[in-house]
Image (cartoon, rainbow, N blue to C red; front, side, top):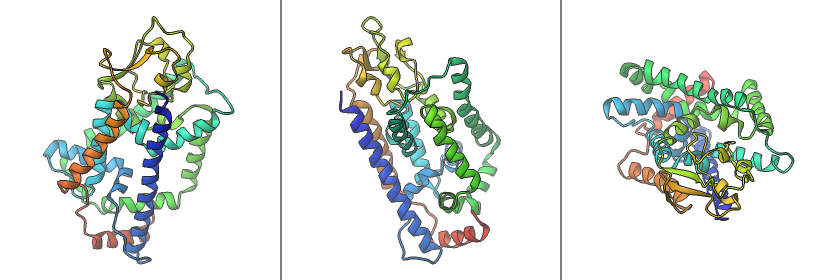
Length: 325
């Protein structure tokens, strides 16, 4: 079982490196489109950073059965994350998300100097509800308020065509408010473990709700538990594991580190529906395999690359420079 933490860091690091490569290629595509570089093909995976558009596309898919042709990779990755949550808990957060990886690294460094602060329930639960309030706002505005006409208007708008360029501009030229917000997040994570993931990330909240229906769960044998609480010390979601028989919390990211650190054999196990013990490698292998399956199906069926001609990207990116980011 000791293989889990290093393998998890390796998988997270590999996806983070992939995201950096995608960002680098997209930057050079943007330079070409704005007349300042040689041609580099646009990497479709950059659409993973367009979650709001993916949610709009997902609603249109549910209403009409039509797959978004403008940013299909974003929709594919969004649906893959939902499917992973349904089958393998919040495995997308625990094994793939580069933002989660970044805060995990910060936590690993901070943990060398101080023990994580555990909030009392009366404060922890209201703070955790913030991400569900943000999620509720998105679902209300997009899932409830936007009708099909509004969806089509948004998807055909110039903003939606050049939204990836605007996203790039946000990272290359962040405003003072954005810089202040990032500083706040990292400062807060120095005190409260994984502050962004636990309290503010709306898509983490959505995946957590989906994961509540996952058949895979961490099961605790209360009769053999020695109440050492090592599991709670390593849990990135600050879940009170020793108070549960089966961990169904939407905060569980499926990292399995609680199972690994437990000193009593089979006290904590990965189980199917709280009954049958399952091998630990099933969860990470399933997470990565399901994500790659969605990618391959989308690629082979023509639902990965954008149907927007590169010349239109070139025109719209030039407009984004003139209108600002």
